[in-house]
Length: 255
Image (cartoon, rainbow, N blue to C red; front, side, top):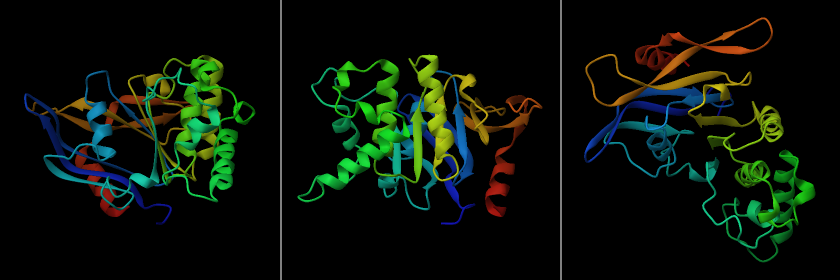
């Protein structure tokens, strides 16, 4: 896979629940190595988009390509950081054990040392290796979020997806998280999904917004907004400047 190969591509994707059309004719893409923000208000369809990307739902029409394959076939190449842990944070388990849950293959005889090394490497990426033996329940909310990032990194994925990455984080934990993402940028494709436009950081290469169709359609679409560089090194989203779906499709064909 070359540096400029397409990491994720939606082509004319539509999805609905029995009583609700959520997405309609969605087309967008981004390349490997990019840092992408996908932004939308609560209830706009972000969760549905995530489920489609992760292969947990199938589109009614259109196609989705993730790292050159279907989402289900690419699952082992994805590191996913959910907004909320899927288990009781008070369960008696160490930080290192939580991180090792991110390894795709089950524990086999003779591999424990290698898995421990991978877990410690992942914890080093989020600056928490010194807490490896600490009970997970003893950690602050921000530290727990960073441990979940380490869990997602443990298998060294090609793409990292973070759902509301800075939710319930204090400023210092958020700073450390984005320092980690800055170190990963370029080598790992990064997608953050958020309702908070403030999460569009200086690291962001492109930003996509879940938006209503301009035509008379019920479902929502995904629109790429232009990022403008400022002299102080920061970036701002131009809500008044969009790339149409046709432009995105043309860029994908030429990219």
